Length: 180
Image (cartoon, rainbow, N blue to C red; front, side, top):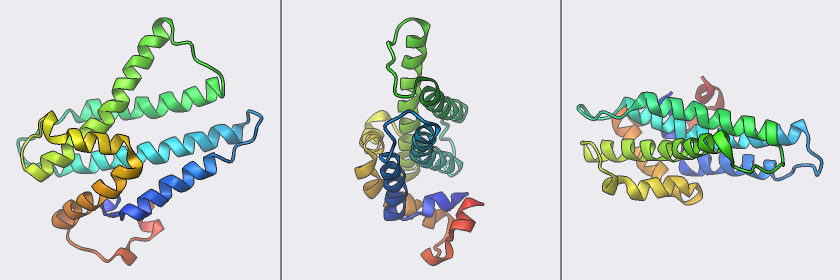
């Protein structure tokens, strides 16, 4: 699955922008199509973040220990929560009271943790030691603001992939191979 690390920044940007653009063509009436389009957009954007974090975790330097279990739990919770909210709430409002408010607070932490984990893994690989927050805060914000972050971070991720797995011609990565 290390092919996610080899995607060019423009390919990744186009994939996310296209799903976002398609999601903007919603009907005025609440419908299953609107919900599916929103879920697809979230899964594509968060999927890149999760898959990249997962693949970077596999090639961390020795003695660098990140909490991968928490990362995977938070990944699942974020996608499940957003998907559930889209289905249950639709275009409705959320008041944020009671126990649901506590759950939302944890989900916000989980969402930020996905970004922090991926940023920390990237910097730990580059530094060849466990990165401290000051080392990866820039990458954290670049991941949060993905339109800019993809153009800056994905080339660095590509370099790590080439160094670890060897070079490969871009034409060799087909959609079928990527989806395997």
